[in-house]
Image 1 (tube, rainbow over the protein chains, first blue to last red):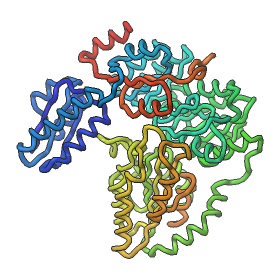
Image 2 (cartoon, rainbow over the protein chains, first blue to last red; image 1 turned 30 degrees about the vertical axis):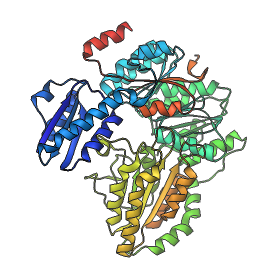
Image 3 (cartoon, chains in turn orange, purple; image 1 turned 180 degrees about the horizontal axis):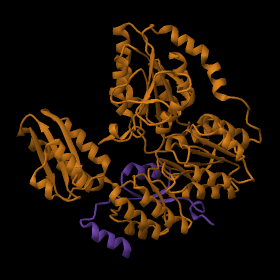
Image 4 (cartoon, one colour; image 1 turned 135 degrees about the vertical axis):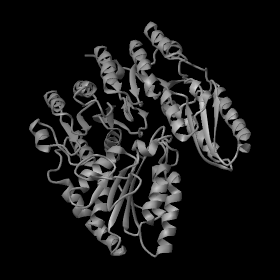
Length: 513
Length: 52
């Protein structure tokens, strides 16, 4: 049976809602539960779940709806008590002694020097708050998604005032050595980044750090900035700043290939006084070189080139993918020898969206029968995103998987069931994954997927077959998490680690190829 | 154009999920987390937004 509870005036952010959902699901006799704020869109979710009531119909956006599929009503009073304590716990600030600010105005009045506003509100409210922040001369980091028309509007307003809008859909940035969003901690240095890709920015910045250099500024623009409608407003503004910034010696630009009109604007704006490296994932290298920039083939090569140039050296010539494949061949042969002839396929499960796209770009060139849940490159689209076919690369940040759950970069436990599912498939020889580190990210990403690693070991023993598990850790030695210890724990489960997403993907491809 | 964002250390106001505020705060950055609630009346909110 479906029972629905409405709690009036109990607003919670998405992370707290998730905690309530987890707690409700723990009650005996509860099979499923949907916990949402009573927005119009969420009411349709409740309706589809079968929990629509008159009380839900008249509920407002400040009201919390808990719809429960349970054996009988006897469990409801205990759930109501639990939810009450959780709502009241958050209302009192969770034990924090901080002042309680309810509006942007009250916060800005208390801290007039505030110059960056981070917004991760439901999309329908993000626009008004963003405009209000721009009026108050604040730069923006917007995690929420927004329609392109709204994005254009706020970016034009900000541009006119010399303010930055990072996002909508921004995941990462480093401003004056402060990491924003789901970003790694990296040392300050001479390399500046502008990126329309969260995990692309992070991978380059992390590898720059790991190769010994650092980041002057890393400006994330959100994935839609380089659309023809938005026109690259913030990408070009970021490039303009870095071109004139005395702290920046080398500039790295990261994106999917922009609209050709926007690409032309970027090429025309390239500075002559410092080297620029352009990584347009799967883009036209000849076009980039003709514009006078370097055209790396992987995010790792972009970082290597940047570090060489910052050190006054010319980047190495040659095809880095070819070189990597030769270097990885002996390890690939050893692993292949451990697999049965029937274990022909690889399954990649990615937390970072650009990590999955980079893997697609690299592997589609030499691995046949490739599928993915993302429309990218030449691979076939998976009809059922929950079921892999042959060789599959799956972006686990796909909204199909993240409904009511945090993004896998924040909490990679979303990978667990899928990793086990892939391991159970006797045709699978290789499982590939990535974990990302930094502020606002899970305190123990390895712990979050540990159940899957244990289960893979059990399946190996039971089925008498080896499963090759390959990972890449996007993190530095100064993260809030201890990345070296995370690596040690993964190695105890037999996971083969590679220093970059590109190398991990290439190794996986070589084993099954 | 002068871009003021880079002229001084960030001071951050966070509206939305709390971990973003905590992530900045643990780096020693001045941070205020706004305990945001949706306005009861969206039209009124738009008007207030314009006034403020």
